[in-house]
Every structure is written in structure tokens, then in C-alpha cells.
Length: 217
Length: 182
Image 1 (tube, helix red, strand yellow):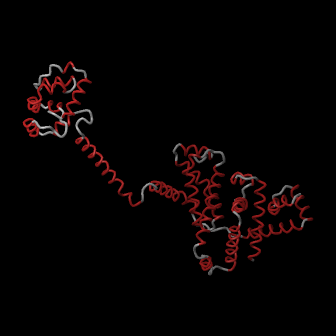
Image 2 (cartoon, rainbow over the protein chains, first blue to last red; image 1 turned 30 degrees about the vertical axis):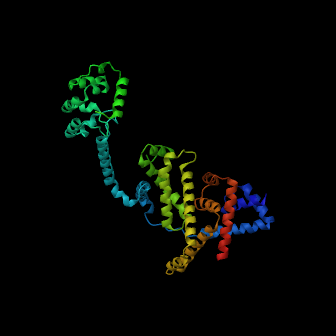
């Protein structure tokens, strides 16, 4: 039998756990091999010293208390995984910051809707709110060019404004104002719009664009 | 539920039954503790690692496929975490003063026989510490845990022949170390 195979069997030889055949092979080899005999003595000494070793001390009831302590650690571990994203000092601020950010978002959205430029969302309703009654009067009376295009539709939609505007717009306004639906509004506001119902949407759009470019009321 | 086998308990745990995990812990806590304790003689350090083993099990059990037994899986985690702790300690010791003086000071009042045994235990621990990691694992699992080689081979994913050779070298080195210290 090879030395390496004997080495593998030596611990079991000294622990008495070899088969009869293995035992005979090891003893035969040891009787004729001083190197392996020396190794065998080393193993014997090591194991005998190990057997003298005292049992390690362990606190009483350690295993009985293990599970509750483990669950405490598991809870801590879960919390720590949350802290991976935020430092611990920020934890008390999370709730107030969340409320604050929601409030800011709502306020921001509200402000955005209020200040949305007229026409930006396809509706011209907001423009009415931007032009005060006094300003409309002033614009109408002085017939000035506006620095921002003031589209006719929302003005006309407000009945009181429509009267003012209609005095100055006349037929020039009729040619380019609104879609076919707007004609009803114009009519309701006392503006004569005999031709507008005949215009296609594209034609109406091109007239509106033209009016915007000239910025003339 | 306590009569269920390990795989059935794992299935229950995967379905959210925490009690199944508790039973697994109760079933294996002592075995895991002693493997770790042999690698880390300090109880508190061993306790810390044992808890880490079961936390790891708790968080990873849902992905446990059952290729090996839970017992093998836990032993593998335990030996790996304990050896990580030993490496960490060695690194720490490199940068700090040796605390062996303090350990000796604690032993001053013990009777002679007890003192000798305590010293022998410390000496054996030192001897084990000198072993390469593979031999250390094999030695602990074979000598202290008395696991069959086939079981150790599954835990360490190695051949039985290699394990026997590792065990032989481990015992011989421990014997030689103790002889020199005597």
C-alpha cells in the first residue's frame, strides 16, 4: 500500500474505525516503514492530547434564549436594509419631508395650471382671466397693438368683453376668428359672422395665424 | 409542525410561515454553534457568527433549491462565516496589541489542574489556528462534529480521498505543535 494511502488511514486507525482488511494493511505497512511509523506516532500523540481537552464552557440556557435574540437581530437587519438608502439621522425626517414634498407638488401643479400660457393646452380660456376689464377698455379705445397676441375667442366668450371688442374688430375679426363652433359664440356676442360657417377648420386656422402675425385687433 | 422534515419546513417558510423557520433554527442551532465555536473559541464571537448564519439562512432560504440538505447548507455557511471572522480578527490583530497578556491575567486564580487544562485548550486552539483553512474545516467537522467523510465531502464540495489526507495532515500538525509547546 502507498504511503499516501496509509496517511489517509492513520487517523481512523487510531480511532479504531478501520475495517479488518484496512487494519491488517496498515499494520503490515507500519512494521516495515519507519517514516509512516513516525507519522503514526504523531497522529497518536495529537489525538491523545485532543482527548484531554476540556469541554468548552457555554453560558447556561444559551440555546433556550437563542431564538428570541435571533429574531431581534433579524428585525435589526431588516431596519438596517432600509437605512441602506437613508442615513439614520434622516429617519425621523422622512414623514414630514414626504408631506412637505406632496404639498409642494400640489401647489406647483396648481400654479402651473394657473399660469399656463393661453393656447398652450389647446384652450384659450385662461386668456380671459389675464386681461382685465379696464385693460380691454383701454385697448379697445386706443386701438393699440398688443405686445402679446390677444386672441379673440376668450374675449368674445365673455359677453361683457364681446361688446367692447366687437365695436373695433368688425369684419376684420370675422374673417379669421375661431372654428366653425366659434361662429355661434360670435353670433351670440352680436358679431356678424355670415361667412365663418363656410370656412374649413384649416382655413380658419390660417386666418387666425395671419391675425396673430399682424397682432392687430 | 415539528414532525415535518426539513424540506417540508422550508416549503412552509417560503409560504410565509415563520414558525417553520423557528423549528429549523431549534433543530440546528446546537450543531451550528459547536462548529463555529471550535473555529472561534470565544463564546461571544461564536454567538455573533451563529446568529449571522441564521440571518443569512432567513434571508436566503426562499432561494434555497434543495440541491443539498439544509444541514449541509448551514454547515457550509457556518464554516465560511467563521473563517471570515478569523481573517478579520487576524487583520485586526496585525494593527493592535496582543491581548494574550490579558487572557493569562484572568487565569491567575484557577487551581493547577484546571489551569493546565485551560492552557491545553488554548494550546490546541492555537494549533488549530495554524492550520490552513481547508484542513481547519475538515478537522473541525471530522474530529469535533464526528461527521462521516461523505457528509463533509458534500459540505466542502471535495473528494473523500482529499478529505482523509487533509484530516491526517491536520492531526499530525496539531500533534507536532503540541509537542513543541510542551
